[in-house]
Length: 260
Length: 311
Ligand SMILES: Nc1ncnc2c1ncn2[C@@H]1O[C@H](COP(=O)(O)OP(=O)(O)OP(=O)(O)O)[C@@H](O)[C@H]1O
Ligand SMILES: [Mg+2]
View 1: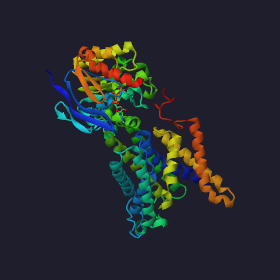
View 2: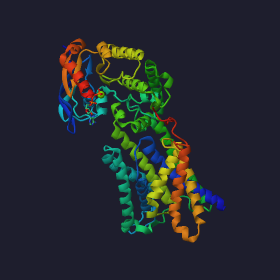
View 3: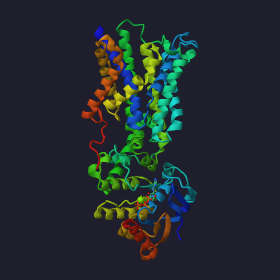
View 4: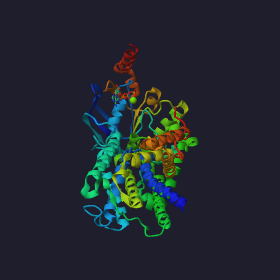
């Protein structure tokens, strides 16, 4: 039995009267690629926002590698190795694509104002090394041709890729991917899945992945956690989850509600 | 001779405004902080240096007759300290709070300046603020002071340009573009913003100090929002928000235009003179519109500024 890198206990968050997340318990095993699926509005992204510190829970605790991280701000979580992407991409619009990646690694004091004035040689050397890493990530994501374009000008799919690029620039232990595949073409998506697997196997990065693309989930994720109406419905392998009548009902129920 | 003096005056004021506009560019153009009370930091800087460097007896509580450099240092320290206090409270809140807070503080400071006679002489202002090189003959005194202003401007420009192009500046621009994404990328948004807010405000305080020494006088009219806040915003937008060179160009350009409108309104018939003040503002607003129609990002736009709207 592997250790849980992320432990969520009794987590809840409401928006006005709407209980977006309620009483969620979730363990993400170190070294796993855990899937998180569920109908639209199930509360998946809200759960991510709670874990990543973008929202404060109304109840419950979150632990990362044994440390209680409930209520810590996002930048503090990043320092602990927790990195997330946004379902609706949030590029730094007026920075170039390359700058969007260069800005991620914090360095050791290189981001200080005084360093800008007093340590210009050191900054230039680090920048050159960083630039090589960025070029590699850009190549991986087929973004090299647009490297020096403002990120605000990217297509929808390219913005998704840039989100993933920021993850690749970070030294992450746990990565939360929110529908990274939506709007990305099949060929590239298969490549991305490959990169996620490589990061997982070779670098031991743990993933928690929201996806609507069941093929991708089936290929990457074990276990798969199912959410519906703010709660965890069940969890298991993709085959188990697929056969579970409650899961089928949750998806059909959501569809029926939409049709009505 | 008259022309030399006129050109010198124009460039000196342009240079002083350029220091203010560089400060605002760091706030708004680079970091996305909406400072609507530039006049407040200007006032702190101007009055700080006036009180320290004017001769004893300049106000009821006295000038101190200290060297000009001391006055400038105090101007920057005090406006920086004020910015730190405001920023500590407001920068964690939603961004519109900063706009409200800075307007409010600037207005409070203007009232203090007007009413605390023991300190500021109220509407009479503080006279006798020393101007470096004033003992030289005309026009050398004016030219020498102009060179001093341009030297200060050059140093400020170089320091800011280095900062904005460094990783520090890149973080600031990232925060400007998307606060939540910057936080998710590990940046302590509030801490970074505070640094930019303090540094930009120090420049505004320095601009106020330069102005007090240039006019050898500071009074409450100089801290009006129209002159010390609105005009600086026009300069930044016309010049090109996000780019230091744009901020400097905008300051000189708009100051020249603003002075030109005075030449125009001076020729108005006497019964129109009372209308001159708002006619000038209207003219400047009109020019702003014309420039923005042709150059959406200003005369010298930020280099990576999005050229066309996204999908
Ligand atoms: N900031 C917010 N304010 C108010 N309501 C919110 C907010 N964020 C989410 N919600 C609501 O919470 C519920 C869950 O939303 P969430 O985005 O977590 O769903 P999801 O499972 O990610 O759905 P999808 O698959 O469509 O992305 C929805 O009903 C949504 O309207
Ligand atoms: Mg979602």
